[in-house]
Amino acid sequence: MGILLAFLPFIVFAVADRALGPSEALILAAIVAVVLLLRDWLVLRKAPKILDIGTTILFGGLACYALLGGPTGSIFGVRLAVDFGLLVIVLISMLIQRPFTLQYAREQVAPELWDSPTFIRTNYIITSVWAFAFAVMAAADALLVFAPQVPTKVGIIITILALVGAIRFTGWYPERVRQQSAG
Image (tube, rainbow, N blue to C red; front, side, top):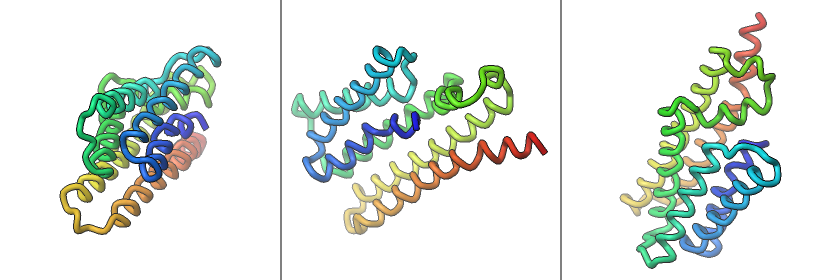
């Protein structure tokens, strides 16, 4: 549940983008990101997670840019910036050797497994799948920005497939690793 809640600002952005417009959606998503970050830090007394910090910076920066009158471009241009920003957050988490899924996975397993090479490798693999999904989403956004003749539903279908694939893999892969380790 924790990792899905971390994507709430992106969900709010996607819904509000359609209903209110890109600038308003960025502001609303930034507010949600800040609220989630503060909730975990101040109310639940949890250390801030890489994804939450990155999301707050991403939406906060884009919202400030929009508020200061920066051009927001098309809806798909803004989505491209958001999805590319998310990809960068995920890649940075791997570059600093803290794949973003690791913090969520540690909430679900015993502490004695946290330093296990299998546990760490599993999280790198899952994080890589999410990075691939975000790269696919950014590519779909770029396609809609640079090839406006492509029907919007193509980008939406690609985005949905990428997200569903990453979510399913995240649920399936750890169980597969557990079964292989036990057998």
